Image (cartoon, rainbow, N blue to C red; front, side, top):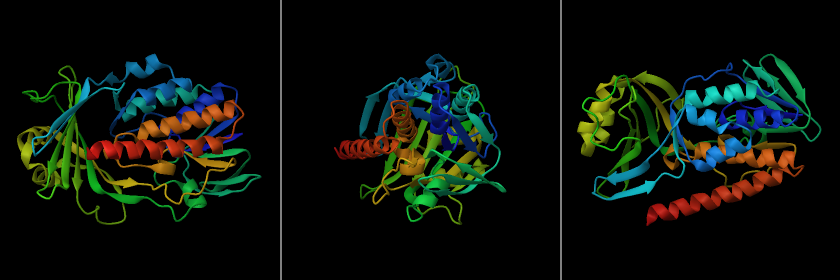
Length: 349
C-alpha cells in the first residue's frame, strides 16, 4: 500500500497514476474533492510532460489552459529582456485541480477526504496517521505531499521549517476586461521590477491578459517585513486594504497598476516562503517527501509546481520499476539544487 498525504497537484497526479497502474493507493486530504479555489500559476513543458507520464490526458490539460507566447522582463532602470515560452501554459489553479480531481477519482485509489491530518508517526514496519479523531495504521510507503506546512515533515524533521523569503505576494483578478487594453502584448507574462538606488529589489509587478478573456490576471511581490501575526497566508482580502501599499511599491508603472487595481475587488495575500534543503534528513524507503513539503521555493522562482510534478514522476517511475523511491528523491534533490544554482547564475549575468 502507498499512502499519499496531500491531494494537491503532485499528490493527485502520483496517487492517480499509481492506482491506474494497479498499485494500492490511499490519498488523505482535508479538502473535499473538487477544484477548490486558489490563485493562478504557470507550468512549463517539463511539468506537463511529468503529468502526461503519470497518465493525465494532455488534451484534457490543454482544454482548460492556454499557452504563453513568451515572458518579458523590464525594470525601472530601463533594462529589458525576453524569454520564449518553454512549453509554459497559464492555469487557474481551480481548473488544474478540476482535471486532477477527476483523474484521481477515476483511478481506483482510496480517497479519504474531508478530515485534516493532525500528525503522523513513522516507523519501518508501519505508520500511524492521525486523521481527525481516528488513528489509521498504514503499511508500506508513506509519501508526504502535504505542502509547505507539511505535517509529515514536522514529524520527521521538526527543526526544518519554512522561512520567510523576503516578499509579501498578492494575486489579483479583474472583474472585467481592461478597457482600453493594457499597452502590452497579449498572452505574454510580463514582469516589471522596481529597483532601488542601491540595486536591491523593491517590487515586481506581473500581469497577463488576452483580448478574448473576461478577466486579466496580475500579481505583485513587495520586498518588506513579513505580514504581522502568526499567519503566513491571510487568504482573500479586499483590494482597498492593499491598494495604497501596492501603488507606493510600483511608482514606475503606476498608471498600469492603477488600471488593474480599479477593476479588482479581492486579492490573495501571503508571505513568500522557502523550505531549505540544507541539512535535510535523507529520504527513506519507508517515507519520502515531495514538492513543497520537501523543498518549497518562493513564487518568484516560478518553478514550484514543476519541481513538485517532477518529484512525483520520479517516485512514480521508481515504484513501478521496483526501484528505490528514496534514491529517486535523493537524485531529485541533487537536480533541484543544480537547477537553482544555474538559475541564480543566470540572474546575476
